[in-house]
Every structure is written in C-alpha cells, then in structure tokens.
Amino acid sequence: MSAPAPCPPRRRVSLLPLYALGGSLTTVAQRYLSFHFDQYTQNFYRFLAGGACLLLLVVLLRPVELRRLWRDPQGRRGLLLLTVGGLFAQALYVEGLTRTSAVLAALIGVLGVPLAAAVSALFYADERQTLRGPHFVAGAALALSGAVGLAFTHDGGKLTSGGGLYYLLGAALLGTGLTLLAKRLVVAFHPVCVVASTTMLTVPLFLLGGLLWGRLGAVGEASPVTIAVLLLSGVWGMVMGGAVFFLSMREFGVIVTRFMELSMPVFTGVLGYLLFRESLTGPQMVFAGALLVGCALVVVSRRQPESAAHCVHRIAR
Image (tube, rainbow, N blue to C red):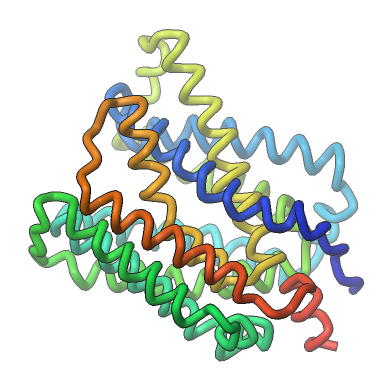
C-alpha cells in the first residue's frame, strides 16, 4: 500500500483554521435549525444531504479508492465500528447533557483532549514527536486553561452533576477510541471516502429515529430559507466536520487536530455575537485569547515537517 501524497505546507496549515471556523458555522446553523426541527428530523436531512454530496464526489473523483475501501475486510469493519460507535458516543453525550449542567459537559469535553493526546501517543510515534515539541507544554497549558475558563463563564458557572457524569465520561472514553480508529482508517484509505461511507451508513439509522421520534414532514412546512439552511448546513457540516477533520488528522495527527477543536467555541461565540447579538464578557474574551494563543503554539510545536500519514506509514513498514 502506497503512502498518500502530502499536502503542500501552506495548504496543510490552512486545514486547521478552516476546520475550526467551519465547525463553528455548523454549530450556529444547528442552533438556528433547533427552532424549527427536532434533532432526529434535523440530523436525517442534514446527513442525507451531506452524505449524498460527498458520495457523489468520491464516486466521480475517487472511485478506485472507494472500491478499495469497501473491498478490504478491515476497511469494512472499521467503517461499521466507526459508525455504530459514533452513534453510541453521541447518545451517551446527549443523555449526559440532559442530566447535568452545560459547564460539566464542557469540562468533560476539554478533558477528552489530553486523554486523546495521551492514548494516541502510546500507539503512534508521530504523536509522541508532537508531545516533545518545543512549545507544546506551554501551548497545551494555555489552551486547556482558556477552555476551562470559557466553560465556567457559561450557565452561570454552575457545576452540577445530576447523574450525568458517567454518561459524559463514557462518551469521552468512547470518542477517544474512535479517534484512534479513525486515524488508522484515514492513513490506510482516502479520508473523504471514509467520511462519505460512514455518513451514508448513518442515514438509515437517523431515518428510523425520525420515523419513531421525529417529525420528518416538518420540512414541508418550513420556509425556503430554512430548508436551504438545513440542506446546506448538512453539506457544509459533513465537509468541515468530516472531510476536513479527517484530512487534518492525517496531515497533523490526533493531538494537533483535537487541540484545534478547543478553539471552536471561540469562533462560535464571535459568530453568535455577530448574528444573534449574544453578549461577550471581558473574562470570556481573555480566556478566548489564551485559548487561541495556546492552540497556535501547539500547531507550531510539531517538529516533523512530513504528514502524520507518511510518518505512520514509514513506521508500519
């Protein structure tokens, strides 16, 4: 199996802010759609639109890689595990969120980043190189401190469990394992083929959820603008949260990509201020600045100029 061709350095670096900003736009769109659709209806149409678009792209542009993925027994098992595991992780997170405060949910999400960093460093040499980077410790400390500070500025800083702690911890642990599985898949196969496949595998499950607990017919009562946001956010969300996320993981590794996830609330807050006139307090801006500086230090701490995929491929050989 030949190693994937690396992206040019400038294009590689641009993947990370694109992923952070793109994910923030998806969150803002979902917040708008929550006023019009239940989560089952919203997820079905969004995943259907995004998955169909990605599947069309790979069928037209990467048909050989798509066939190779589905013909490989390990590839098929990986897709199934990633799809089912992702749904379980999401179900655990949502259940935990309904039983606890938003502050605790955010803190557990922050905890998942160093957890993923530690576990991925155990299995991948390129991840250990990132940990040894000259600016990593300072960057990680700043980013995590800023993320924790932002978490406590929401919901009045109420740190209540309400029985949801174990659900959130389960979601974090399962998400860490899925991240390692995803890295193995995107190193062996084209990332967009992986995303298109897992998305389309998820669509029938969301259809079942929509039929049982949602209201799929609500889309016929929505305005053209709302329908456009629904479908376009699905395409955008799958491209940013799926394809660009996996591409970033292949090029930069798990640790750098997961730390960039921490910056998404900053962009979401800015977009919320611009679109919904939500207020931004002084402490929030200070924590957001520390978070962004920390993420930048983590990114530049990578000593290895080649991609994570090439490093892992060379080690596997």
